[in-house]
Length: 282
Image (cartoon, rainbow, N blue to C red):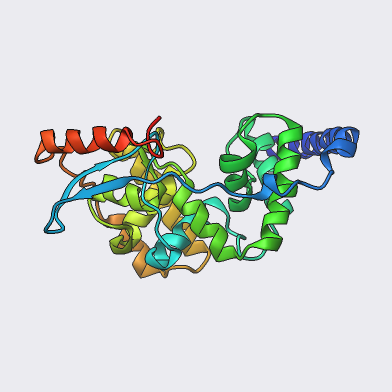
């Protein structure tokens, strides 16, 4: 009986929240529903890490600006890793049109029932828009604008294009932007060599890299990885035997060595020359 009362209360609160959201949306719709400009739906080039090699093709040093990133095509990301991201971040990614109303309702209900934010409703496309175009200001105006732009982007780009851009954009913690640098940072290997379990660890980081960091919080990271794998099992992305095998494995974190790079004086001279060029300098 007590459980039923709590459930009825949660449903009532959800209805009130939905009505309030609808009224707020209508109140600002005249301005918000303007067609987004071309500038608003145009993605800028991703900042990437640069690499310095010697005459024999041996890597001497990598260097980057604010974001340590190496963008790669989606074809280089194993399917199990793509599935892991979809399973934890946007299960209906390939069927919605930028905004998943069903996921929004489910998230609202779960959050009201829990009395706190336990689930998000943003699609991968909306997250990409927030990270690269609209910013993360917590206002209704921004959220509605984000949804409109996400819809437009889905009209102009394929799902695989969006997923590729997303996986090269998101921050995975420990200074790593994009799936390639995340794979190198946590497992000392390229993204193309990631296993199911490793992909699940990285997918679990997207929501909150600091919270689920496998280097500083390995216990929490195991739980998050297993949740990703559970989602994949529920979606028939993996079978029971594969799931059991994956959750029984350790995290296998292998950060790359941070040893001093060779020829430091030569590297410094080259960097000073590069940044002294008008095109590359500050």
